[in-house]
Length: 590
Ligand code: ARG
Image 1 (tube, helix red, strand yellow):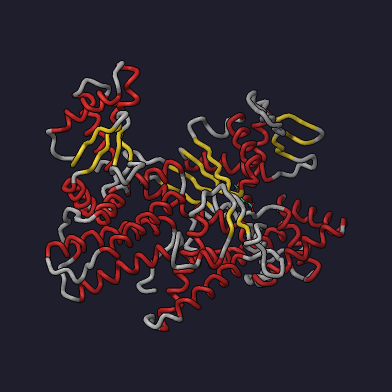
Image 2 (cartoon, rainbow, N blue to C red):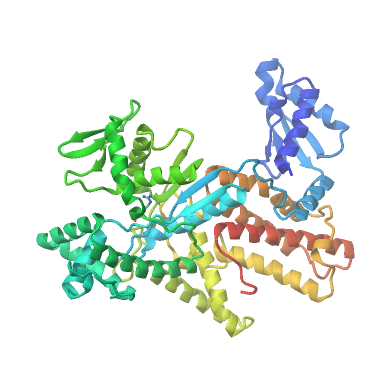
């Protein structure tokens, strides 16, 4: 199906052409004066100069061509200086929705040739607890992945674990101090290492901050950790085996956390995945003359003539030969290119990593790691702040763990849900966790990703206003009407026929539904979940205005009632589709 707005524009373009003007002038937009009209076209103003004619006359010519035509417009009004104010035909709108409702994608076409997109998001670090900074990457990344997938592209989501850096050396060093007798530390041990990990995830989470603090105070300890990191990366058998245990325990815990967040990945690769391809890549960089030596280190210059700010060279190997974050990212690009030939790679990280990605992308192009045809995109997000406007902390000022944040918001929701006597006790926990997840995700996603935002528990969990719970409440309200209608013995909603709108509220709701495809397309083009949030907030408002204006179930005229049921069913499916794309789901009752 074509977009609603495109069908309207086409009609206008034909009229411009028939009147002897450039059809390109016939572009129609949603009215910015809804009190005057529904849609508008300003093409006559744009054409005035070219045709040496007053816009009012051009608009008049066009309106005259439309005068006899049935179909798209109910009325076409020419307003000084030359606006075309448009009202849409009710039967045209009705037919469009009826067609949308027939199709499970609401008429949204699939691309002829889907593009292949790798998404790099989440990016947690093994052995470190997940904190709220990783929340944004996971939540935004998951939503963008789903937007892109809904659009019909082929997406591969990769978590890109931080599993290869100094934090691994720190944990290994501390384990060695605590349990020196473990076989992993015995250089002569030749047998099989134990199946069972010698620590729990709780211990692991305690060890890392302890070791990290200690390394900052004690230079010897730091040197030991550096050495352990080096030995791990160069293949020490015992260290590798222990490292695998750390990953295993840490990843199992991450999976639980991500599952609660309804975030999933197709690949659980990490920085370590590309360890073996680094040496070859470095050789190629040297042989190609792209890398040069600079005080012992190996660097690639990435400045460009148009740079306004200083662009430091990209360090590939430190003077001790160690690889860096940049190196693993370049090698990962090489690996992704070889494995997937993606059309595009999208990274979702804190915006403070912008310089890093600029360097990596430039170095990758320069060294021929990525061809020009592969689009590289970095989406940098802002900080999640507390109500004081400073980065979000626990009450006692510590780093907020993701798990704790989820527990807090669940508890807040449980308080609200449990007080509703209509909700059976056994349903309450599941309902509370769904609404809590909507509160958390919508609170984040409804902001433009690049902006900082304030995590405000009270506002996010409110059932009113621009919040996740409000959207869910609207869906639940529709489901409840549809259920009551079904219980009355009403006709199957899918068999109910759409009708022409009878009220302003009804027509506005219908317009909202008709713009689904345009909104989803825009969200895809801009890779912007906040567009989807804005759309469903408006749609929910439109629905609620209609609902307050209309006594649906009490209606005695059968056709009219069935028309409304068809409208409700479509509204419900569109909203459910959109929240699924955002990565949360609705309960039955709330
Ligand atoms: N582990 C990194 C961090 O915690 C994020 C990784 C992002 N992805 C990437 N390919 N660099 O900051």
